[in-house]
Image 1: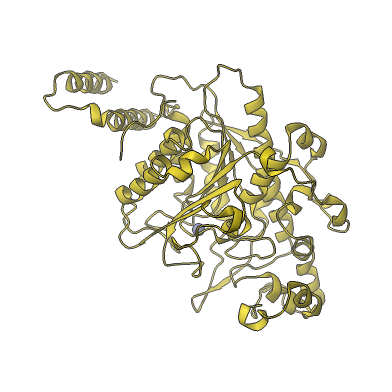
Image 2 (image 1 turned 180 degrees about the vertical axis):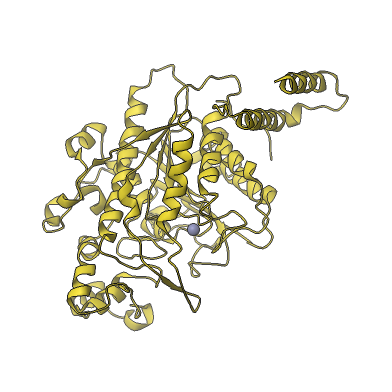
Length: 473
Ligand SMILES: [Zn+2]
């Protein structure tokens, strides 16, 4: 404690008497000082949320369901190697452990609610959802191996580009191996008996979180300036899946479903759908009655999706590529998986032109500083993003940018504080300032560090002051 007092005196002494003008660096000095305090608190076993002037008594809301652990394929085939499935339940366990160990910081929302298949069908095709539910049993019934429900022949453009989607779907081989090729993008997606249940739980987690966020916005007082946030602890992840394709460990695009849910449903609509979570009820036999009455464009909330997973979120980009009401920004390692998307040339199409920004970064040479500079720039000085004036921000939160990640990683991204600063930027930047934020878990594979990295981002958001960043980084 004495050290803290000394550091406090020194800090203000420095501010008052330094011959160098510190004003341009004020934000960063304050930030670093608060991090120092936070670190001291952590060391002393009294980790509490830190604020810079504005008290934040609310805990961070975390939506969780243990059914996310059920999807557990034994192996995957990547780059010519057969290896244990990297997108393992251990990921979820690591994050949950961190949350359980810090009860003063987090408020767990569990059990989750169930909003039926309806919001899922606003994004994904009914035939695809029926496929996800039934393919494992069909595969086993066809006498194929129980532990290796994976595709090996894919419906590439060069196989079928001259055919209409209707003709292709009608005549495609309906054997499970044919269906796998039609609905899968690669060999990282593997089905087990409980895969559908885990994917269904994952999307209900994000819907529960979205509903919670909307409620907290509506219940806040007019003079309550505190930023609203909810964290959806989803597994499996979602940002590589498109309307009818599973890829990159992803089955249902959780962030995209949440975006459409927030756009098309009032909290009253959500309450009408809401029921206790029960995956047994998630049958796909009657999907046709569940199609959405979509809202007119000018009545929709504007959603900014910020994807900070190491990989380009090709599924999310694809889903909203023609859409001017959802702005998609991805900052990612490039070139790398998913190999065919993620360039700066991909800017949206038609009505969506200008509402898609990719920031590809060289994984070998991207440092903490470089990464933060790009994030700062897009959220503060990129006019199209600032002028978009989003109503709600969704963060596709991947932690596989960390340099030790076994399948990804920016080699120069080595400071845990960087993740705190990411959270701070999301709270304080021009384009996101004052916006409610839904954090949605995507990738990240350093099992032993995941909880801590997630915690840094969430605390960076929750603990930073309710003031805009004032400087160019
Ligand atoms: Zn990733």
